[in-house]
Length: 126
Image 1 (tube, rainbow, N blue to C red):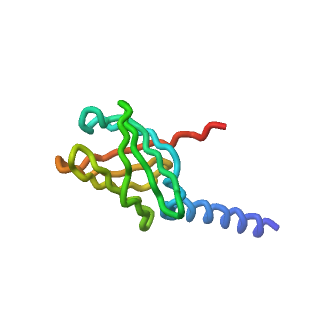
Image 2: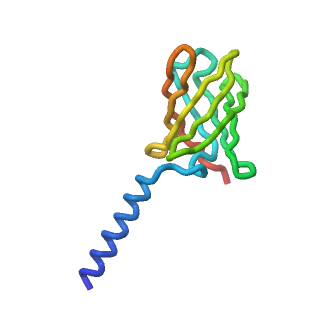
Image 3: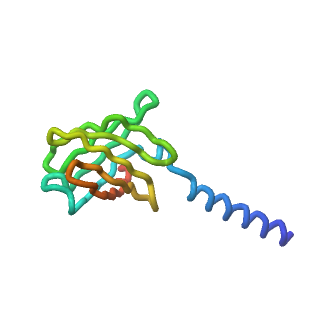
């Protein structure tokens, strides 16, 4: 009986560990994410990322603290990494992000250089 209990505990721990290591899926990115990026240009430092799934594809927008909204384009998830593109101040900015430790972490590749960012998922209201 003791061997069976130890076996099931080990199996449970292995399942939890493997789940934590699994790459993020498209559904993991869906939701509302708050960000605060102090090293971004003025006006683009704070806001919310909204990601939804429509007709099997991801779509999203970024709403900055001043109310400006920018559509996220060319969104795809490959091997747990979300890639996207936004059009800001007459330039395209490519982004990539992954889910790490329950946070949305990534890099925005701008003409002025790469800007790392991190966002926290907003809890759903009942």
